[in-house]
Image (cartoon, rainbow, N blue to C red):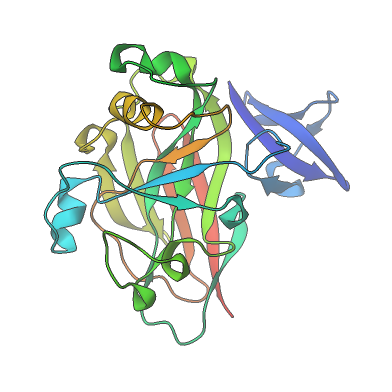
Length: 250
C-alpha cells in the first residue's frame, strides 16, 4: 500500500493511492494537484532520528575522489530539514554548487535493539524516496559534512509515498533515476550499495535503539549535478515513487 499525508481544504489527512486516485481517510477522493503534500510519516510527539549515509555507493565515492568506506559513514539530520512532495527547496544566494541526492529511505517499523542481520527486514516498516541536497560550498570534509551542508531547512524533500515493506519484495534491487527539467542526469540501483539495508539495521541497532518512524537515508549513486533557481528535480525509485521538487534561490 502507498500511504501519504496531505493538507486538503485546510485539514491534514492520511491518504492512500488506489487505482491512480488519492483517497483521503474520510473516504473522499482528491486530485493529486489539489493537495499540499507533507512528508509521508505519522506525527510523533518526540524528535525523529534521521540517520544519513555518506559515500554508500562506490561509484559516487569515486566521482568525489574518495576511497569507498570500510564502515558506514553516518551523520544525523534534524527532522526540520524534511519537506514534502512538490515543495520548494531554498538555494542560498551566491552558492556555486548545490546538488541533489536520490536516496532510498528506510522507515523503521518497530523498536529495534541488537537486531541480527537475518532478522533485519522484520523491523522495517516501509520505504520512501528522499532527496538529500548538499551544498558543496560549505563542505569541509566529505567524511564529516558540517551542519550548513546537510542540515538545512527545506533541503531534504521526502515522499510522496510511504510504501509498506511487504509491497517491496526486493529493496536491494531497485532502479534509481533523477531528472532535472526532464533530462536524465542520474541512474543507479540499490543493488550497488556498499552497506545494504539489513547490514544498516544490524549496525545501528547494535549501539542505539531504533524507534518506529526513525529514518535511514541510504546514500546516492554517482551522477550528481548542480541545481539552479527554477530547476525542477524529480528523484524516482522503482516501486516506491517519483518525488518532485523545485529549487528557489533566496
